[in-house]
Length: 180
Image (cartoon, rainbow, N blue to C red; front, side, top):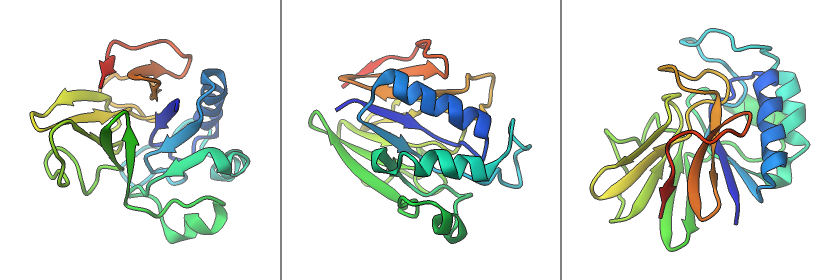
């Protein structure tokens, strides 16, 4: 399965559109969203083209292709307008014999990891900073942010197709490949 992983859209119709264009270009089977879909949050500036209603329309149109976990800015009110589930705190995926614990990152993260076994992957958003680190007992990965990247990182996402690749929204590979 080819999987695209993205996080932290924060209501930006501009970057959501670029993300969905990248998803189509990548021909991925599913898009895993790691939370913070509609609201920008009190600590963030408004992202470019902050238009949550447009984000709702774009994502609802592809609801069968989405997997999603809840971010710290996602609420029950958001679930009322989105036609796919967004309120799960985490999901578990099996890829090529490895368990991926996908969550937003405000609860489970490298400082407070869930119970993982050797070779498992902790996959978070939340920090808006891409990461690929071997933590000894597990691997920590973060796609960064679609709309509000931090620490001079790119507006980006990850692709899994046998290997993990970090890409900017134009599809350029960033220097962080990882094989399982």
